[in-house]
Image (cartoon, rainbow, N blue to C red):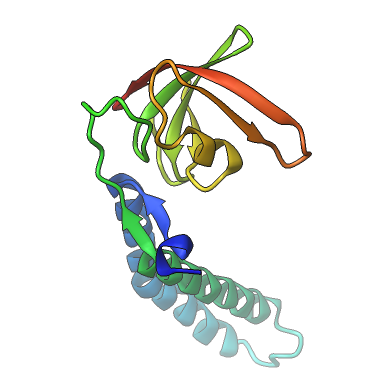
Length: 160
């Protein structure tokens, strides 16, 4: 696989949010957990010290999340939105008609917050992949995780 196949397409907003979380976890939160471990150590026998074990567990989870964030940011591609293209891209809101059921979706990642009533669809999901590159008036189809094929018409594409 090429490097772009491993890349996660993020909006600038999502990238900034992940960067802020990484900064907080690798500085402030890391130090707070270290301080709690030191205080708990002072309470004596570590075998039966629930406070110590809880802090050590939290430390492990925090370090795992830091590794995940670093990998996501290292492999991220920040998508530039061209609001005049009329094409579905990461960072755009697409309105679809699925047999009379009209829905709005923001193509991005779960870190994006497009607004009230707009569901986020990952650009790497089957639906997201099917929508990317299409335009108003196109009909797209994709196969869901259960093997069912869904077809929908694109009625609008706009910037948030």
